[in-house]
Image (cartoon, rainbow, N blue to C red; front, side, top):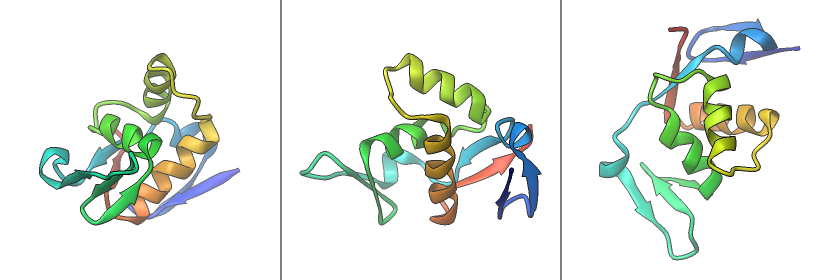
Length: 101
Protein backbone atom coordinates (compact mmCIF):
# COMPACT_ATOMS: atom_id res chain seq x y z
CA UNK A 1 0.00 0.00 0.00
CA UNK A 2 1.06 3.59 -0.41
CA UNK A 3 0.08 6.91 1.13
CA UNK A 4 0.31 10.36 -0.30
CA UNK A 5 1.55 13.16 1.94
CA UNK A 6 0.95 16.61 0.53
CA UNK A 7 4.07 18.20 1.99
CA UNK A 8 6.37 15.83 0.10
CA UNK A 9 4.19 15.71 -3.03
CA UNK A 10 4.38 12.01 -3.79
CA UNK A 11 3.12 8.61 -2.83
CA UNK A 12 5.47 6.15 -1.21
CA UNK A 13 5.47 2.55 -0.04
CA UNK A 14 4.50 1.89 3.57
CA UNK A 15 8.04 0.97 4.66
CA UNK A 16 9.21 4.40 3.48
CA UNK A 17 6.66 6.63 5.20
CA UNK A 18 7.53 5.28 8.63
CA UNK A 19 10.98 6.80 8.01
CA UNK A 20 9.56 10.32 7.62
CA UNK A 21 10.20 12.89 10.34
CA UNK A 22 7.09 14.95 11.24
CA UNK A 23 7.82 18.54 12.31
CA UNK A 24 5.39 20.85 14.10
CA UNK A 25 4.73 24.10 12.31
CA UNK A 26 3.84 26.09 15.43
CA UNK A 27 5.18 26.47 18.99
CA UNK A 28 2.89 24.50 21.30
CA UNK A 29 3.24 26.71 24.37
CA UNK A 30 2.09 29.77 22.47
CA UNK A 31 -0.86 28.18 20.65
CA UNK A 32 -2.29 25.49 22.96
CA UNK A 33 -5.44 25.80 25.07
CA UNK A 34 -6.44 23.02 27.45
CA UNK A 35 -10.20 22.53 27.27
CA UNK A 36 -12.57 21.72 30.14
CA UNK A 37 -13.31 18.24 28.74
CA UNK A 38 -9.62 17.25 28.76
CA UNK A 39 -9.08 17.88 25.06
CA UNK A 40 -6.85 20.50 23.49
CA UNK A 41 -7.14 23.30 21.00
CA UNK A 42 -3.99 24.08 19.04
CA UNK A 43 -4.05 27.06 16.69
CA UNK A 44 -7.84 26.73 16.48
CA UNK A 45 -7.80 22.95 15.81
CA UNK A 46 -9.52 20.73 18.37
CA UNK A 47 -7.44 17.68 19.31
CA UNK A 48 -8.03 14.66 21.50
CA UNK A 49 -5.34 13.90 24.09
CA UNK A 50 -3.83 11.10 21.98
CA UNK A 51 -3.57 13.45 18.98
CA UNK A 52 -1.89 16.08 21.13
CA UNK A 53 0.54 13.43 22.42
CA UNK A 54 1.54 12.71 18.82
CA UNK A 55 2.00 16.43 18.15
CA UNK A 56 4.31 16.73 21.18
CA UNK A 57 6.74 14.27 19.58
CA UNK A 58 6.59 15.92 16.15
CA UNK A 59 9.86 17.82 16.59
CA UNK A 60 11.52 16.75 13.35
CA UNK A 61 14.08 14.65 15.24
CA UNK A 62 12.09 11.39 15.39
CA UNK A 63 10.86 9.28 12.50
CA UNK A 64 7.27 8.03 12.61
CA UNK A 65 8.69 4.63 13.63
CA UNK A 66 10.62 6.18 16.54
CA UNK A 67 7.58 8.26 17.54
CA UNK A 68 5.50 5.09 17.66
CA UNK A 69 8.05 3.40 19.94
CA UNK A 70 8.14 6.44 22.26
CA UNK A 71 4.33 6.61 22.45
CA UNK A 72 4.16 2.91 23.34
CA UNK A 73 6.86 3.38 26.00
CA UNK A 74 4.73 6.20 27.45
CA UNK A 75 1.79 3.82 27.79
CA UNK A 76 -0.15 4.83 24.68
CA UNK A 77 -2.48 2.24 23.16
CA UNK A 78 -2.29 3.90 19.73
CA UNK A 79 -1.73 1.42 16.91
CA UNK A 80 0.64 2.02 14.00
CA UNK A 81 -2.22 2.62 11.57
CA UNK A 82 -3.90 4.99 14.05
CA UNK A 83 -0.63 6.93 14.28
CA UNK A 84 -0.63 7.35 10.50
CA UNK A 85 -4.27 8.51 10.60
CA UNK A 86 -3.47 11.06 13.31
CA UNK A 87 -0.34 12.36 11.60
CA UNK A 88 -2.19 12.75 8.29
CA UNK A 89 -4.93 14.73 10.08
CA UNK A 90 -2.30 16.96 11.70
CA UNK A 91 -0.78 17.53 8.27
CA UNK A 92 -4.18 18.33 6.73
CA UNK A 93 -4.69 20.92 9.49
CA UNK A 94 -1.22 22.36 8.70
CA UNK A 95 0.12 21.53 12.15
CA UNK A 96 2.95 19.30 10.82
CA UNK A 97 5.10 19.02 7.73
CA UNK A 98 7.50 16.19 6.86
CA UNK A 99 11.20 15.85 6.36
CA UNK A 100 13.00 12.77 5.09
CA UNK A 101 15.96 13.56 7.36
